[in-house]
Amino acid sequence: MQRVLVVGISGAGKSTLARELGLLRDLPYHEVDALHFSGPGWAVSPSYAADLAGIAEGERWILDSHGPEAARERLWRRADTVVWLDQPRRTVMRRVLLRSLRRSLLRERLFGGNRERWREWLRADHPAWWAWSQYGARRAEIGRLAADARYAPLRVVRLRSAKAAGAWLRSQRPVGRPLLP
Image 1 (cartoon, rainbow, N blue to C red):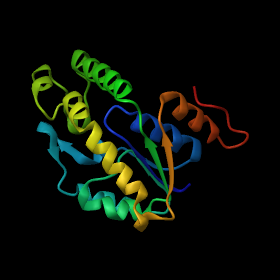
Image 2 (image 1 turned 90 degrees about the vertical axis):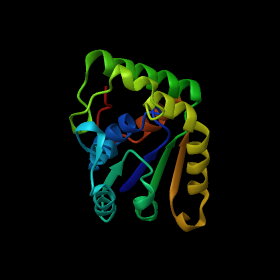
Image 3 (image 1 turned 180 degrees about the vertical axis):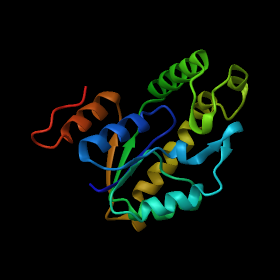
Image 4 (image 1 turned 45 degrees about the vertical axis):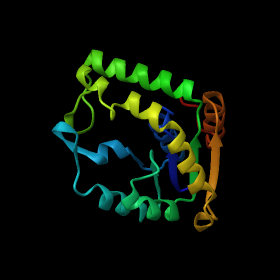
């Protein structure tokens, strides 16, 4: 496991699992949202797809996304492992709502210096609305990619619950290395 994509819908736990797996396996972790949003107003980095393509060409990495269309093919061809956090909708929605609530209340700085604001909660692209409306489509899309013959040597680990994800992550601990808290 040298080149890993951690995939799933917003709120599935991709960033958390990718960061912890990166530490356990000593893989350079790249947070895709931090690469995507480059400045105020949720501005998209003009080099986003090229940056991801450059990372994909590396020998060792872990990313917390299945990638934008412009770089997806290269990412999936280069990855040796996909960890699919196929969490139930109720788990995803609880997480994304609590995360957005915390971010809004505490005015946490996010990617590119942006913050989630209360007025954004009613927009269709707010993480909570997006996770709800795109849950089925994203799940189907990842399923198609995971079954695509073009990526046949790819190892797909499908984790359908938080408990399964935790157990799998613990199993990735190299011998002689302590468990993360």
